[in-house]
Length: 193
Image 1 (cartoon, rainbow, N blue to C red):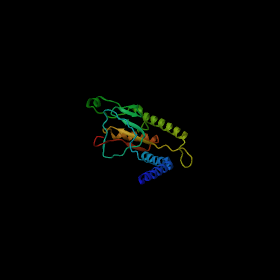
Image 2: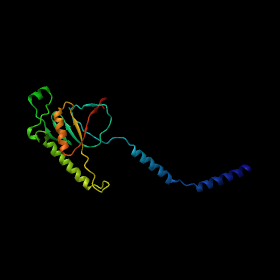
Image 3: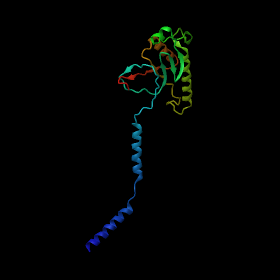
Image 4: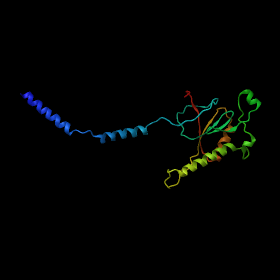
């Protein structure tokens, strides 16, 4: 008889526990939101994409920093490309074609300011800057004074490692004249990655 009594009490206790038990979703949702925010803040995959061109030999680097998204100039032995649009073709002479290199010579009609500024590059950079400033003026993002965020002026330069310094200097001078003050030279890692 005792066992019968004990089982009735156990059934009564189980029934009482089941009636008062409810799943607390609020605490569970709070924990899931915190985990989601943590994962989003610590997500380290890069969405920055830089296109490369066949035949270009980038300089090697031991650095692992990934540059931020920015406008890009690609300089190959044949010419210059800005944002996937060919803007300048270098002059190819019989000698440069024969030895397979390029002299990175610009046409005289592509230069002004005493041969220091590359006109097609300057025009493309100014057009991109004006577009950026227009988008920033319409954006809701503002500084502490309520003004549109200023133009950052960041330019990524991907140049063949055989480029002549004089040509690189003209590219940097032209970019600076157009309001681009920060240059990021792209390179490949030494281990080939």
